[in-house]
Image 1 (cartoon, rainbow, N blue to C red):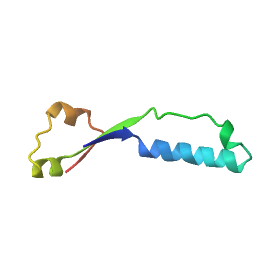
Image 2: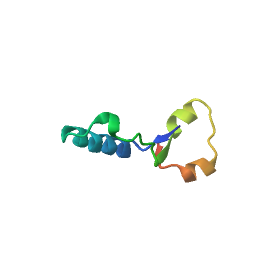
Image 3: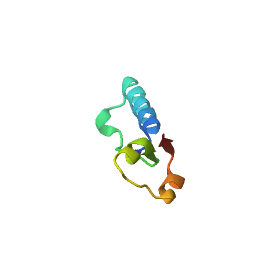
Image 4: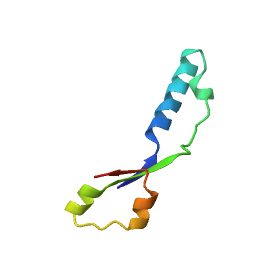
Length: 67
């Protein structure tokens, strides 16, 4: 199970910042941004092999379930 920032969104923001820098923006003047979108991913196969029972409420909230 993992919970963290949406990787696609973070990479998109990195690309936007790279474009700004390549177009002359000074990196030191760009604002620091915190992620706003997070994902919950559950690997049910690994959980079962480790004997871990994941509550159904977490499965309902998961963005992705790996089986």
